[in-house]
Structure formats: structure tokens, C-alpha cells
Length: 107
Image (tube, helix red, strand yellow):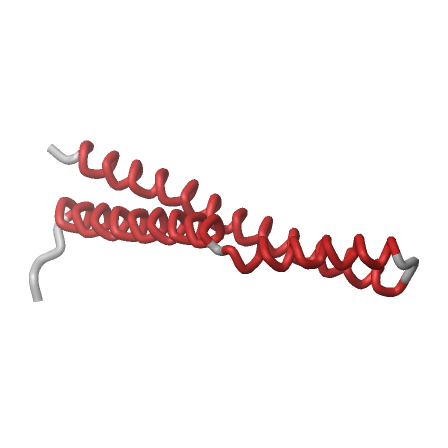
């Protein structure tokens, strides 16, 4: 076993915080990019809107209600995924900053 000094412990903690920060930042950016690039959700939203318009034109109340519920669910899904991505990005930057601060305090 090697001796664990305060300096070594600080290096290890800073390295762990830096790696976790980079992983969090990368995961957040990946989530945001995948949601932007995903055409499936936008296609579902377009088809649902088209279905709702058809239901309104033909006065089918149940169809319009179900289509609007589906559209709301898709919008909520997109907002939730975007929120998770932004949260991970916002957590990644402070973790990297804390790692830098710990390393800058060493003499």
C-alpha cells in the first residue's frame, strides 16, 4: 500500500471530479444533440397535428381528444429530455471548475 498524503488525496479527488464533470458534460451534450437530430418525435408531432385537424374537420370528438393528448405527451417527452441534457451540462461545468480550483490550491 502506498502512503496517502493530503496532496495525493487532493490530486485523486480533483482527477475524479474532472472525469465526472467531463462525462456529465458529454452526456448532456449528447442528449441535446440526439433530441435535435431525432426526426421521429417531430414526425409523430406532425402526424398527430394532422390527425387532430382531420378530426376537427369531420367533427370526431374522441379522435381530437386522443390526438391532443398524444401531442401533449410528445411535447412533454421532448421537454423532459431537453431538461435532463441541460441539467447534465450545467452540472458538468461546476465539477470541472471545482477540480481546477482544487489543483490550483496545491503548492
